[in-house]
Length: 432
Image 1 (cartoon, rainbow, N blue to C red):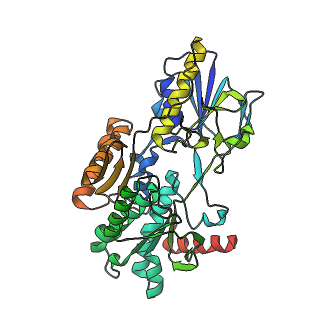
Image 2 (image 1 turned 90 degrees about the horizontal axis):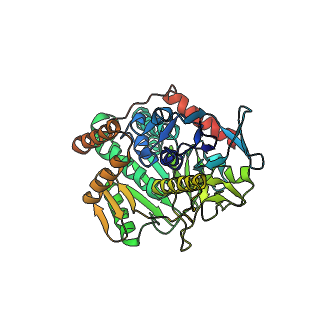
Image 3 (image 1 turned 135 degrees about the horizontal axis):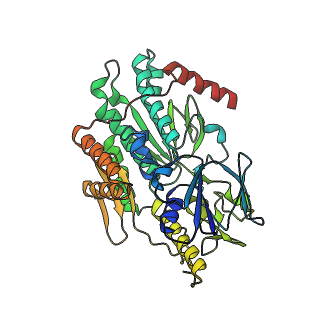
């Protein structure tokens, strides 16, 4: 067994790509993650909106590396790094030594100083988040079917998505389709067409990462789906009763947070400089300042392109960073020249608007509408792991496209509708 020990913390896109690229290198690898699965996060919103099942976008990490004897997987949580002793500490008290450490620990939701909003306005980063949002959305319709009071019924049928980046836009479009196309024939007491889907953005326009004409097209497409788009209005409060937009209160029972992210505590572990989102400001080769044997990649790192622009926190960027660090490790072990600074290659920006339209910006060409949606779908199927999952997702999408029926609409958690509502009120009162 090789002596050089590479410890990778985080089984996301960056960490998994790094380990794949180290295949055949004279190293032994330990991968540590708090969860036992690798998640295809770009499709997580489709689990939250009943399009896909959890098993279609996540794979056991141990299964991915079952044939790699040099890779050890640990289901554990890291709570510190001692860069002088070259060890990391686990929550259970164990310490693990490393020769090279790669932190790819990702990010979580950021509520801009209002963490008390999280219980009533969950974000979307994990499978647990997705199933929570799905449960709340479906229960809202079920509770509305039982509700006698018109005002309470209207609040139950109002859905607020805070943040109009790709995740917010994708969520809003699918929830609107769920209410206006999938559910109308299944309810008797309520008209699901009356559901309001609100997309709220503090900035001047939705999808600010896209050029203005594509942003405008997406806004028009959302309006056709029945989504109410509110821009230039920050959210000032979230409670179990509703959301306050500026000075106006909107009664609603389902709020989804898609407005910001906060990096993991990696910067604090390393005592390294960080940006406002807590991401480690790395060197040009993605190493931590003053720690050439520690690399930080993915959403944990603040990376700039060679012309000074920030590298976006998307899956292709994380994979490129993981591949770059693998090249550096191989070069160091073989005594070859280092590959130098990380160079990000932007492969395009994509976002869906409902289940039949999308926008794509490849730089040299911009696409919109149904053609863009098919290209978006093919690209995502290509990057899924394994033929089985590619076929499963492709079939699910084809069925939904033809039938307009969402296939993952089971409410499986133990909480009843009454328990769900009561727990929401209880959490809000505790926070207050």
